[in-house]
Amino acid sequence: MFGDAAGWLGVRLIGLDRPGSGSSDAKSDFHILDWPDDVQEVADQLGIERFAVEWLSAGGIYALACAYKIPHRLTACGLISSTAPGNMIADAGPRWMRTTWWLSERFPCLLWPLFRVVSLARQKTQAGMEAWLIRLSSWLGEPDQRHLAIHENRAYWAEALLEGFRQRRNSSLKEALADFQPWGFKVENITFRNIFLWHGEQDRLMPAALARLLAQALPNCAATFYPNEGHISIMKNHA
Image (tube, rainbow, N blue to C red; front, top):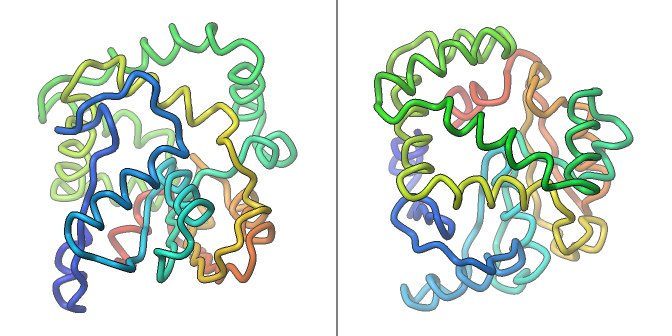
């Protein structure tokens, strides 16, 4: 979805699979702050000294981990519809989100069956995943519903989700649970200053109020909020 825009702008776009996703080997003891080391290793192998990082949704955690741990290698850090830390969700998140984060911190074992049920509900085929996305869209805001009503967009997200479950589902479930746990760093302690945040005002998965708290906690964060965008429509319409 970013490929055409990147090519037009002359940007070298490199997509990495986190451990256990796509074709990347799983790591049993992987932690969020291990990810910047993997990114550095790839950059070193490719002979790239400095680079920008950008992630969507829960991937924002890993972009922020890079800004925290390897700021000397970064030119910029981009956050699209990014997840906010648990303390901000506890303060300003909707009730369902506050409850989930509270349970994950205190009783993570209770969430494992829930994540497993959600995982198993996702189909193993492209057509099945697209049908699942249509059902999911009824819960999302209007911009995301319009976005997923277009087959080209729906096919893209279905393919991406299938890649996430290419390997054993337990790998994806473990990563999802790790996102709900403390990240190993505080965003307020990030010294990197060239951070950009883009967020839709009609995002129902990660409400804009949380994105504003995140932007305020980061040093020199340039935040842009789009009134007519949702959680995933923003990526297509503003790539």
